Length: 275
Image (cartoon, rainbow, N blue to C red; front, side, top):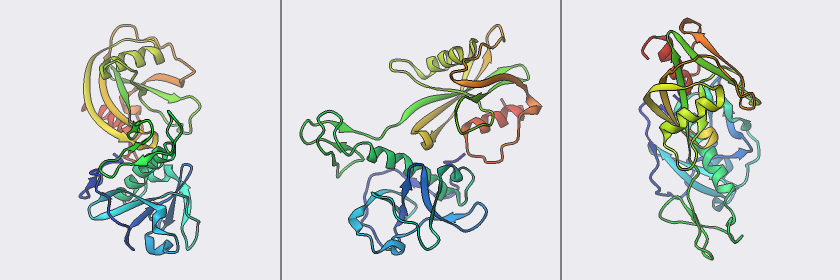
């Protein structure tokens, strides 16, 4: 999956390091990130020596991978010297994978920092904690941590068939499993039952947790569940959420070419008869 970066290690500990010439820069314009394309799916990010004319205080330390330090450009850097902005979706299949994951995680933090320049309670400028990834208001003492939204991915089995869907009104057009966000006050298992009922009008049983995945494209922490149909298999599709929903035979599930998402990994395991 997108967070599987081989022998590399993504460090979430908050220990900011001063920017050096080889510090890796992450710069965003909306949902685009600044890279230099070096092959069909290969790329590099700029380092500070590529933009050494920009003051160092225009960059914020983000995280480390192994010993490489990553920094966020507070304002979008200009395109030059082969560096250009590409859609963040390029990172789904880009190589090297550890750099692709860094760009996706960086986008989530970029959005969080951008959305909390001012206090949402009193309107004063927010200050940055020196000891943890948190912004706070010195006037009203509001504290804000990064946004992480819990959600479920649900593989509903019915014998040798799997329930798949296509989202309504979204850029992603391939088939996917049912998914939805947890609500305040419910368990993640209750989210599974509610989302399946809301989206397709069926009941499920035998919930089996499979794996979680940080899906930083949408600031989401995904919880993947396999489960079985409980009763009538007639689907009542909520077309406000889904364009289509249907039962698909095991052998008709498409191959996973990106190996990026929890959805495709779970569908592949069902196709292979593992689950």
